[in-house]
Length: 312
Image (cartoon, rainbow, N blue to C red; front, side, top):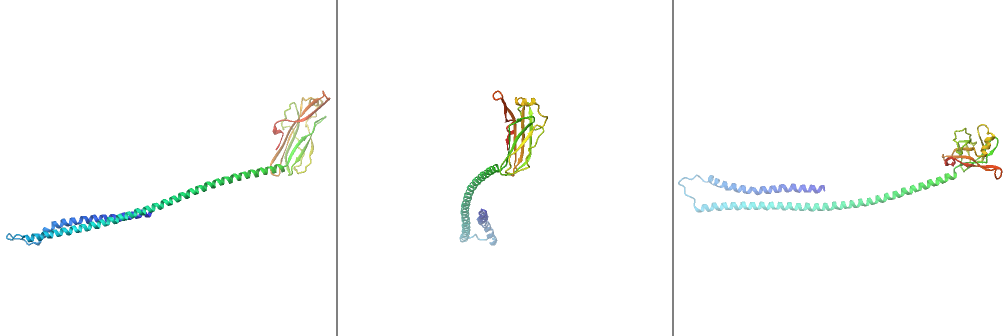
């Protein structure tokens, strides 16, 4: 495109002097002719000697000769003008051919440019399709990777859930003697080690079936800090840390007027550095069968919120 503009400017620069020169040549003969027509009488007057009053008038032959000379001079001027017009016409023809050639070159360059633009548009369209396909494939790969990661995480959770340690608490029936003691058992399950972090147990007697808080004096579960697989179930005893119950209080327990609560937790970690809790909250529920069998029996019933009786 830059070359085409340069060629056009060059042609215009070449044609302008040609036209100017031709117009100048066209004007020049007329001026010379006028000059000659004006100067010939003067030349004749200078060439001719001064005539006296007694000189004889010119003959007809001399007048014809002068007229023929003027006609010959006019004829030569006309021929010169025609020759210069022909030359000017040639210049115009050359300029016309140059302009026509420039138009042809411009058409060729435009055609080549259009072809290049169409080819670039086709390449860009193809690249856009490739990018869309690549983006779709990348999205599919990302979804597949996410699915694989979720599957791997699920498999890991399954393995951890299968191999992790578990600690549970079970209770024995309550024996209402002179001293309130609760027997329970700590059991261990799993194929990996558990690391004991903390534990607390409280035994209380209240007038409500609602379990008390753990702010009462606490007892610790008797467990080693590291519990290995194959740990045998451990039977332990928790007791009420207060003055011994009176006979009337034992009678109130048997009659279901007051309630015995057994509550606590065990906190531990596994080999995967995950924290686990075993929480329990029981109340001794009375079955009064004295009317049928003459005995009083009962069982440990879970009480409190679901979180108070959970294993994580």
